[in-house]
Amino acid sequence: MKVQLRGLRIAVTGASGFCGGVVAQAAAAAGAEVVCLGRRPGPVGESRFWDATRTPPDLTGTDLVLHLAAAVGDPLPGRAAESAFHAVNVDGTARLLESAGDRPVVWVSSASVYARSGPEPIREDHPLGGLTAYGRTKAAGERLALSAGAVILRPRAVYGPGDPHLLPRLRQAVRRGRAILPGPDIPLSLTAVENLADACLTAHTWPSGAYNIADATPYQRDEVVAAACGVPVQHVPITLTRAAATITTGLARLTHREATLSRYAVEQLTNSVVLDISRARDQGWTPARTFADFLAARP
Image (cartoon, rainbow, N blue to C red; front, side, top):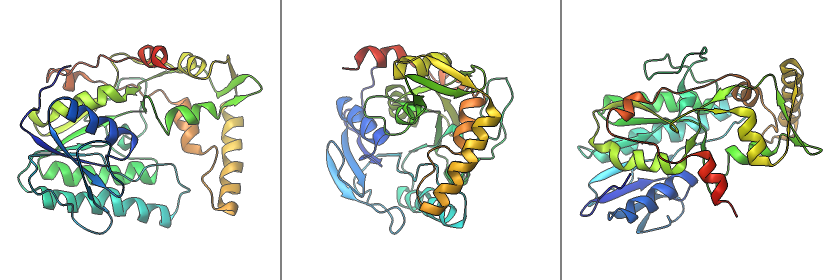
C-alpha cells in the first residue's frame, strides 16, 4: 500500500527496535519528517532521548505519534518481571498519552493480550487475559490508550529482516538436523513487519478502537518452521515438551537467565491462534506481504 505522508512530522517511539525501526523508515519513505524517540538513536530523521520508565517524551513540533516502544520478552514469572514490564508498557504509556495531548496516537499492542482461544478466528472483542507479564501489561496499557481515543493495533508473531525474536526462537527447536515440535500441526497467524508498518502509517485515519493485524491468510506451523530452518519437522508429545519447559524454567531460576523453553513458548507452538483481520480490512488496509516473500528475499 502506497501511503503519502508529506508535510507530516511523525514521532515514532521505540524506533531503535525491530518494528519501530521499520516503521520509522517507512514513514520517511512516505515523505514524512520523522522524530525517533527512545534510549538509542533511530535509523532516520531526528533522534530524541526518551526513557519510558522515567520521563514524558518530548513531542514538540510533531503532528502524529506512532507508539512502538515496549518491554518485550518471555521473562520468568514473578513480581520483578511484572514490575519491570509495567514500568514501560503501562506507566510509559501514561506518560506518552499525557504528552501527546490532542495529537492522534497509534498504539502498537500485541495479540498476546488475548485470553486462550478455541478453533475460531479471534475477533477484537475476544476476552483479554495475557498469559505473561508482557501480555498482561500490554492489555493494561491498551486500556489507557483506548480511553484517550487512540487506535490500537494487535499484530501477532511479527517477522522480517533483522527479526530478533520469532525466527531465532524457531531455530532453537532444531536438533540433529530436525525441528522438534510439540503436538500436531496447527494453523497460525503471522505478521510481516512490512504489513504492520503499512497499518501504522494509515491507522491514524481509522476510528478509535482495536484492530487485529496479520498477514492475509494463516500459515501451517510445520511448513513455516521447515521453510525458515531448512530442516524437516519431527513431532513429539506435548506432555514431554511441557515437562522439558518445567525443567528449563527451574534451571533459569537458578541461573537468573531467560528460560530456553518456557511454558508460554509451548502454548504458542501448540495452540492455534488465527486472527480475524476483517475490521482493519474494512478501513482499506490490505496486507500484501507474505512469508514466502520474506523467504525469497533472504540472502
